[in-house]
Image (cartoon, rainbow, N blue to C red):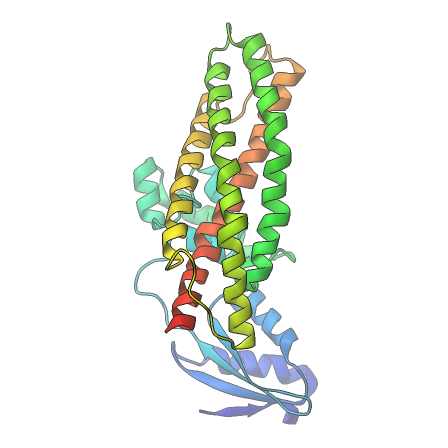
Length: 314
């Protein structure tokens, strides 16, 4: 395997030389860069400009010599699923939401399959996705490259806490609106009932994740990082509780989809009072948070945890 000695290259030409070397690789090929300091800034530049097309492996980590093996990933024979597309670039979630394509619970479908199922023009979606790719990336969260224990903490602190705070308020609002406006707008009675079922489902669901699944995933991450052995879990393979969590995601997602449909995309009627409008605004916010929440678990956290468990127990 060829080694590129970056210390012998003029500073302003270092990154261009590395990119040129990488671009010349075929899928599955690799080279090593040799440097006198941690080249981590290069990693972030490659993620921004080349996306998830490479693997980054430290061979030596200082203090005087740093060597990194950079491999070009082989192109998949199968097209990426819409869940994988969002995992690579979360900005694409907004495109899928705009077209009504489910990238969280339904994230296992290809773009073609998802569009055919919904009767949507695939070319229109592809055009919108391409437009997103052309836009400069901001410093958005790169969830796919986070350590699993950090991702668990993020899901708990951002999404679980949000759900716990929002559920009670939305439950009260939905019942209030149903009582006041149900006679003229019977759909709000059904919306209140659906949200009650969502609240009943999410509370024990999150408790199971927080008390059983999340601690185990954090143990997996620590064992990998510290190169220690994992003991046997109380539930056997992690695939069993993950399958249960994903089934519950489908149930909650289905109820939220029905609320979206009944509310005409959270569009209040002309005679809606301020509480009615606030309810739809908060339900829209809740749905957006739920989509990201389920995406992070179904498409990133759970698949990586399953793979990591297999590696550690092999």
